[in-house]
Image 1 (cartoon, rainbow, N blue to C red):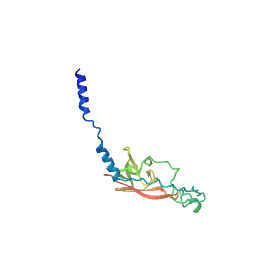
Image 2 (image 1 turned 180 degrees about the horizontal axis):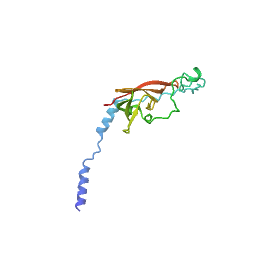
Image 3 (image 1 turned 120 degrees about the horizontal axis):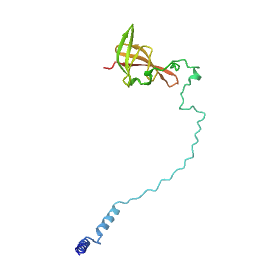
Image 4 (image 1 turned 135 degrees about the horizontal axis):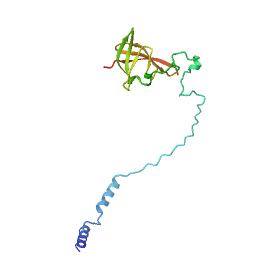
Length: 169
């Protein structure tokens, strides 16, 4: 009984909040319509373009080198890596990952001690190879290990580039 009485009282109280007078809402809508005279421009007419026929079969391929070594200069005579020599263990690492940790001198020859990323020490002398770009050691001294790398150039050949690994402290 209490529940029914409570529900009836709630309905009676809420019915006082309902009003059918919407004159203020209609006045606001009329004022807004009078202030903003919105007109939508018509959709522009689409101009039909004729299809474009791309015929570049007789033009040079932009993805091939401008100078063809085989055609212009015969066979390539510049530096190139020796693919027949056995690869050395330090050639599987990039030069950035190798550290020079010291040097050794024995019978007029100097050796550099190189630490690879796995923590192993390697003895390196002039003529040894290291790095991914066919780096050949050309000089070893107490401060650094100097080498010459072979890197591919834009013409399909190879270019020599000087590089070094400084002594780590």
